[in-house]
Length: 114
Image (cartoon, rainbow, N blue to C red; front, side, top):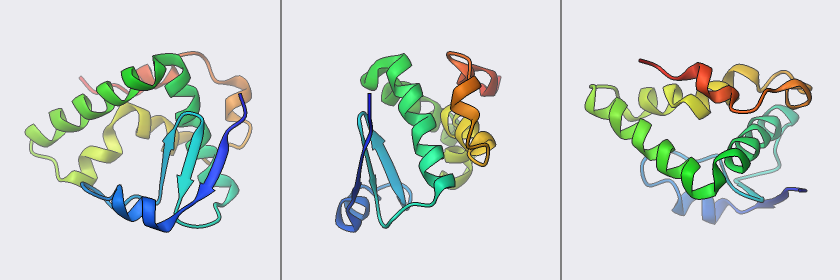
């Protein structure tokens, strides 16, 4: 499935309820504030793969569940965001532009904090 990249600073600002949103992925759309670098686009494409694996609603259910868990544990919003397994995988591999070619299914699970 091909992604559709939409540049919409307004949408990103409206989506910035909890954290400042540069880009958001809603299968099959990637909505961003401005034209994205290859690294940023790769980060969002990793989220597309995650969303396909968990269906969109499963991905966002778990995403919010992890984020709330880390907040309850005393992390700041930014800290909690960075350790969500989906974000941890994407940040860890965003610079490897060939990552998606070798990525194993459900690779985000190795980033789950216990």
